[in-house]
Length: 290
Ligand code: G1P
Image 1 (cartoon, rainbow, N blue to C red):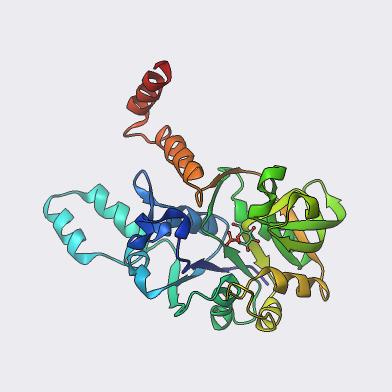
Image 2 (tube, rainbow, N blue to C red; image 1 turned 30 degrees about the horizontal axis):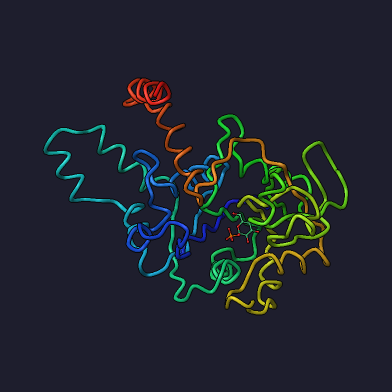
């Protein structure tokens, strides 16, 4: 069966970006003129996803509004003959079939995914997390995982190599077997290990394809010491029943959950942005000379 549905959990509190995230969802922080969640949705759509479920909290209605039509704004732009802008805003609302569910309590990633069980309706599906913008203009990054799913019919975790100093920020995979150049059979996943305990340097970077059996495993996960239901224990119990593969994702990654990663994305996308690229380059040169 084709992978055509994706869940994007976006209900987190965004504490790493306080105070701005007190009233602006971290998914709506702009990379120049586009919110970060649009990059995630675009990766899904370019990868062949047709239906998207975004899990939000009630305080994040600006995400919902962003993917809705905006008749008043359209009317206003029409009166000013700004047809290019009308196209730009309509294109966002038409990008895919986007639906929303509210996660009433911040009970963790596993709980958020569980809210998509009916939407998924027993099909293989993708998950995209919002903290990583992954760019590959020739081969969309989620598609790289979907291609491996299509060949194996097994769940696939998107990974990338990280330095020792970063293993404690991610779920890190243990490797059972090297299948292809960039594909491993996974033996286990350890959530945020110390360097001493790391099973490898390959970190899960927020792109997954799962068989629907993952829901049975999430439903058995106990709440952890922080009061959350995590996804990683469910992946480990899925591993005891089915093969799970990882795909080393080819593409440039921006960790926009970190302030430095975010500003790097703003600069790189700015250097590519028709309206500002020349002046931005001049400006960056000028501050480099100081
Ligand atoms: C989550 C997952 C982790 C993964 C990471 C990727 O952690 O639990 O396995 O590596 O996303 O961004 P979080 O960043 O929500 O703590």
